[in-house]
Image (cartoon, rainbow, N blue to C red; front, side, top):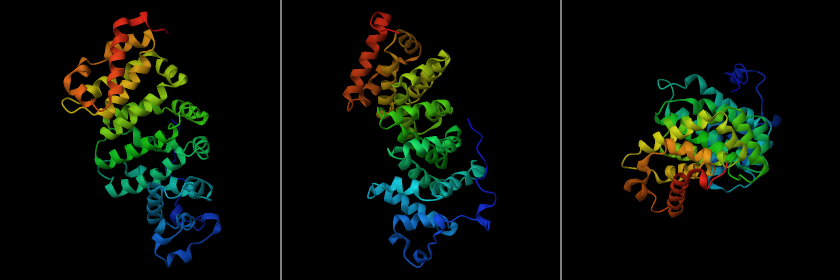
Length: 315
């Protein structure tokens, strides 16, 4: 993984050379209720540290409301905006410990991640987002083994950004996304998110893995070496067994989809057979999938393939 800097700009906040967006000032907005500010005015306010948190919060609200379809383009094309948003991300690195990280700090960065997800999922900004490797700045949030709420929120929102890159898997840019993610060392962090994340993080991470596996290059990556696929199967096994009497239907559905993809080859069948937990067919797990008949059908198909082995599958 690339080495990320501790700071994008030495002592940026106190620098006499501090940037403003396109040289514009937001003096006119200061006297107004910020909730009435336009997107362009809010983007200008990102250049002012005293207004940045509120501006980001309001931009996040606009994104969640879905009231501005061009928000991603406005953010991307606005001068210095990505710089200011990355400054927010990097500022939290030094306090990224259970003793220092507060829920307020986590929530502030999560608002930035909502805006990054907007960029990652938009057809016209996705490629540029990938090319400058913004996703790599989120990796520290995925590498952690901490389970506290501030860490769980950052983990989940970071996975959401990655998920945005993979939403339309048939899109050529999404295929580029798979390549970028595999080459940048994302996969082990995705597995770690299943190991240490909450239910929502596990669900998102397992969905991401299914999107990677469905691509030829993703499947090849997981088999080279074979121990990598073994690690995936082991993480899935542990996640399923730890659910006990309260299985998560969404996590199960995504893991089953991964099993189904891998079981299409005899090699995959052998690996799955070595790791798939038998409790997956027990009453609590089947009952959890009652609302997802397609997943139950897929699960039965997987076990049929495992029973027949190489007779019905090809490498």
